Amino acid sequence: MGKHFGNLARVRHVISYSLSPFEQQAFPNIVSHGIPNVGRRFASQVLKVVPPLAIGYLIYSWGTQEFERLKRKNPADYEHEQ
Image 1 (cartoon, rainbow, N blue to C red):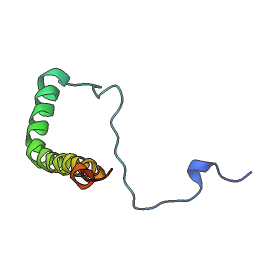
Image 2 (cartoon, rainbow, N blue to C red):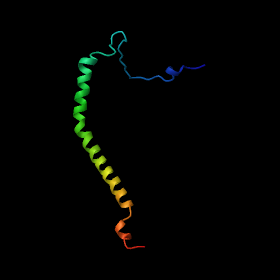
Image 3 (tube, rainbow, N blue to C red):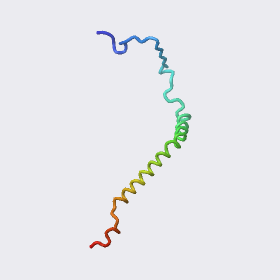
Image 4 (tube, rainbow, N blue to C red):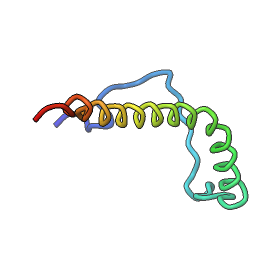
């Protein structure tokens, strides 16, 4: 019935390397290197991420408050009406 899915075409000049599952470790040094690495990466990105988010939040909250203020009628405009 023809070739199987993995052997549909002949690919030349492609070299692939792999490591046996018995030779690799699933989670090597996860506590000693992984957690400090997460802290280091987080600390290096905080100053790039937090200021734009804070500015965006301040603009959003100001805009919401300004919208609510402008949505209300001015009571001074209606003082002399009956």
